[in-house]
Image (cartoon, rainbow, N blue to C red; front, side, top):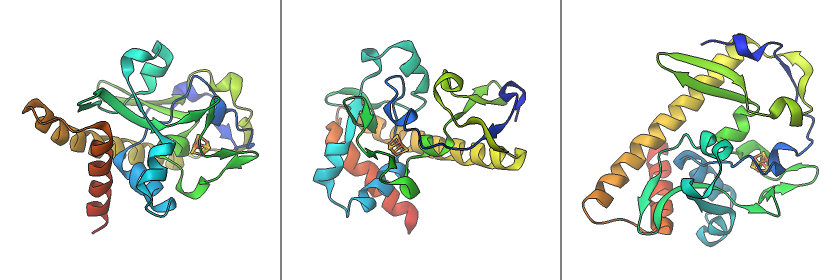
Length: 198
Ligand code: SF4
């Protein structure tokens, strides 16, 4: 893993909430994230639907498009990527001074402000675009160790790869003329999370 573009590697979250209210950040959700959230919400699917949006790539600008590393799900409502809903630019789980679901927060919140980018055979770790301007935690606290950064990167890619595999399976059904609704797809993704646990 190439860490050169990180430069100084000091980071400590200052609980500023900037990342949770940045209009240029969408927190995309893997099926494992969805399963974790479902459990945090006492398995109330109705409440989960209030916290999740279905984002369509074509409706967003390039900055947001670059974050959408998840495979879009082909549904009867179009190609969508599940992500946390925003309420007046704030994440639906943000409650000042911090996150209401911090121990169970999604993978992309765990890795923030680190970004892992696949370039051919190489994985480059860098800071999320614009985070050096907006995140007051960069440059504070202890130096992040190489082991920590590499292990987080491995988890990040593993979660994304398994998610994209599952979405590929769902999309085969859509190609065969049986697309799910976005809500139906969400439910199926949660059941994959349940299967992982067994
Ligand atoms: S889930 Fe928590 S950490 Fe992630 S954006 Fe929302 S409030 Fe912030």
